[in-house]
Length: 406
Ligand code: CS2
Ligand code: MG
Image (cartoon, rainbow, N blue to C red; front, top):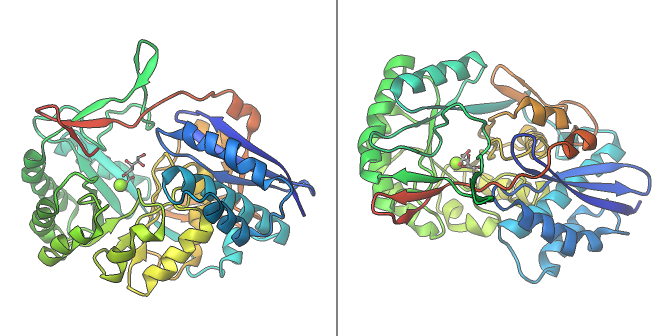
């Protein structure tokens, strides 16, 4: 079997998605997600200019060899753009291989280790009453674990708090150029406010509902240690991205002070980003997505490594992971033993029309379905009706104007 065509498809059914489509000489196609939110065109160019020419004529069954060739052959290794491009190729080749076998992908990954995949959803509110209503909405939708994000008194625009607009990070326009929204931040106000919010949520919903919170890289290690300790009485399922983790050793400070479980890794793209965090058991959940981490082949290796240190999977699954990336994740979630939980924000109806998928969401759990491959079909005609719309992730600034982690 040979690859005879490779297309890089961009669509924006409410937010931008980049999809790789591989076609073989036997007419079998495979899809991969190459979406890097806010930097989509960088991956499009990497794929079109430096990957597609290398794939034509190769055997799609040689997934590991293709992965290693794209990783080692580039000479310049790692990084979000490179690993998103490799991820898209990897998933597309697994899609082809599973279709040829006539099996859903999870069957090629060792088969099911569970009946279905537990998820968590996002609840948010500008204030506590709005947040409590949002938690109720997620519960009504079936979620049995819920991430809670809240406004902070005195701050106008805060991460994770939507005021009802589309779930995509909508672009703002400055003389026809898309520019990032500027959000504002005050760590002290946040540290004082969050425990009161969790107190209210626990008071309303009781001690058993698994609650998660994303600090989104904004704290120093000591501030993260303090927050972890302050919220121990609320028994979080996890505190996510409590401090930037480029310097992995800083998590030793956090770990020394708190037993609040820690999750990190959605911005990581290779196992080396985790090495100290996992071998020293400084974290409890590894958050990378198939799309950002070099695909199924690389992520399953990460989770096998993590399993030796009792670290569980918790694949990143916001709306900017396309249904292709989500489908691939759910197949892996079903198969790995050290599964923790899957983030699932869902997508707009239009997105689900462009990406018709076999996976289902019921009672807060996902299942990949039994369709051969990853179980996603891409409607190219409908996709073309939603052209790329430049959009950036927000930028975060402190009161004095200093740029802060978003
Ligand atoms: C967040 C993401 O879901 C999460 O845990 O950190 O929504 C993140 O902000 C986006 O994926 C950025 O594109
Ligand atoms: Mg996050």
